[in-house]
Image (cartoon, rainbow, N blue to C red; front, side):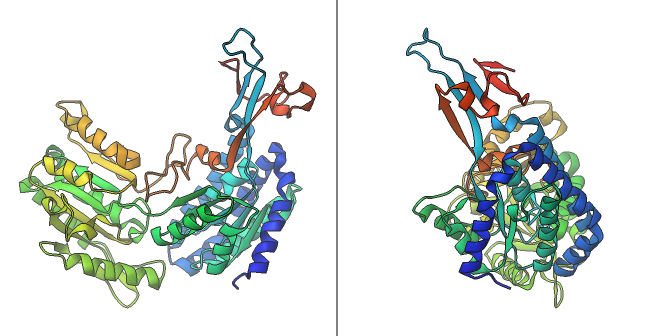
Length: 488
């Protein structure tokens, strides 16, 4: 049932009232671990509900749930360690020019965070997902706007998180759920919402981003919107292992029916014999892929129409035709086009836009100079991938280093001789990129995702008795910090 404006207001105010209870880091860590335990216990019901609404299958959903609970536990560890507070203390020093007063800096939670659930990850990027986990880790209550593709799963997961809160002595309203398109708009405009996290389409995300910026007091909006995830295959790499590259590309672009945000949707590959071998391998591998069901009919229709438009462009071929596989399914495929047609603005620009679903575009270059010309026209991405030969990996010639330098400005994660689908939940991970991949420079995956929901504050010349415990000289909580430019 869609929430009214009054119900959204009550939800946000309830979450806002729960803020003080999250101040205790020990209790926050306990909440995250307890939520993970309860989700593990409820796994059969969660997977059943998610499969009924998304048709992603028990195997995929079981793995996604494991990732979700691992994220919750990882953020509990982040809270326990305390390094995310970024504590810095500079004692008074009259010998400095100009003299330094006593300065003590750390980070505090922003307030209530609005989380917009994703369609393609009903668990890991939805109600109990990374945005919620990182916000709670930061000390921020959350109001989650459920995705309409999986409302029952959202309700079930929200009830588990609220039960976890009650078990550790927190108000259940540290997590509140609302439904409905209008509710999502009301949420981002509510004066007590301090920040927002979104995963979804460019159109929807940009509308919410603009609304967040247009508020009387604008708020941070961390949106993941869309990504082409380009792949560059050198001629030497194709000559060395064309068949393996074709099979690997097929596996990556069809994984999850091409509905991963890191799907390689655009490939620069050489022409000639080596490129022909790669295309043949890709053709064989995709032809062996069964039709599959997309997340909902709206996405299926958009995919079918998107590939129809692209396939109809001049000089564009479809070695394996993507599109409708049946009444409810889609079939994977790929398109090929001369890279030179994409080097300048023209009729083929649609091929440089993301098409959500199991399709990729292989742009074949004659001259390596075409690679840079095409890359210069690409928008921002979550990932960019470089496939090199053994000699190029060893640094023979400048090809590898030059291409890596060209790809780096385009993406938040740059891969060499791998495939971008699959995002490890690791401290060094960065899942973000230049617009339109994301609306900020932050990550939504990994330990540093917590930084989105914090702001720094400095206390100057403040008596010890008045300071927060985190900033006192005796460091009663044993937190990592930097004192007088020395790490403790």
